[in-house]
Length: 553
Image (tube, rainbow, N blue to C red):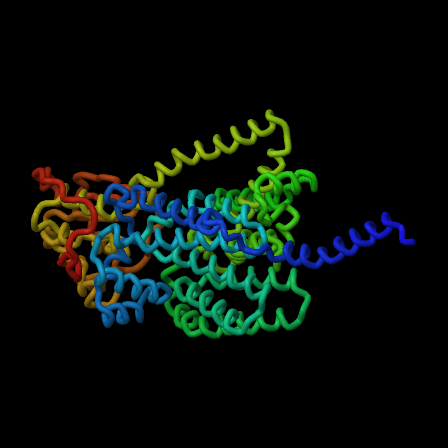
């Protein structure tokens, strides 16, 4: 006669063993929930990013120099853009063509200029959530997606008419494609990965550093040769596609000569950020009992990714995020002695890694706090609230005119205020003429003494200037000259034209008035005895005016 207790024991063992493969599969790849809340929750960070980006998008009608260039290029036709790219800014060519299309559809001034960047950051926030889902860390992904648009660098470049936010969005979705392909390798998935990351590189060449960061992730986490080989083929295709632009852009390398070695503040900021990221990655997971309690409390019968599953996706979250955070800025800083190229906006995509690590850290601390005492939960809540409150003044400051290096609109307004019709106009150095691109009408009553061919005619951003002797001759024929120049203490250009400008002003003119507007000095010079105050003028409106090709003549 069979022992009933033994029979029950065998049945329980069979049930337990049969459930193990299913549990393992679920742990690696949690089945999606049909709950509407779960289905739509990933879009919440994107909506938040959109609202944060639209808040103060006009920035009180201000426009800094690089945005003025974008605005002017977007209003040139395609042949004019191609002509300009043959001389300068080829690295931004794809972005200028994209913005040309935007302004053809809607010439909405500052809003149209910056809206693509706002939408890009929103797309990146959604992509970060999707990365978390793919890595089996849904809650961490949601928190990371919410953190991302609040980071000060992201807030800044979400409201700039430049390519950096778009690059960030493409890098985010390329990272999602990477982890998806490592989970379920497909040829079309790798083709899509290569196409997205190549587009990011064509928008800005230094996005190629992200390819290296992805390589570190692949080679550290995947020992299978086929996966390494497939990624290498995709990366090789990206490099081959980028090579023609990279080769041509070396002929325009003088346009980044202004970049100097990273200062102590930049190095310290990178080191602190990197150490924070490493610390966030090392935050311990909650205990097994706390994970089970959290799962039971919040799952409502549906599978929930616990702390154990943060590393049970195709790659551990930290193995993706840390290379993104550390490698691109570190490489640019280390190569600075050879050729300085480090600028924080060039490596904005590193913020993706920081957001992922922060989201993971918050998720782990939140799980621990739920199983801890009331005092500890209140402490964490107060600390989180303090961080959010600290971001408020930073966010407000980023939406003020003073947050940017210069303000082309304020410069144009000041020139119009101090100048009289018929005054001469001089830019020193020549590249400061880009400040006229957004509001050319404010300079049309003046005579640009050094200009030979306008920016549009010459296919440049600053125009072509006359020979030094002709510049001197035209300066001596004027009684008053308005000079737009760099702040005192900046290195002086040694070009013959710039030397002649300074020498003629020092020898034959005296300084009448001098005003500082952000990073520009606007000085009125006159022949001795001819200094006078310009009559008051009505202040012009904010933002870029109606575009007319060219500049002051």
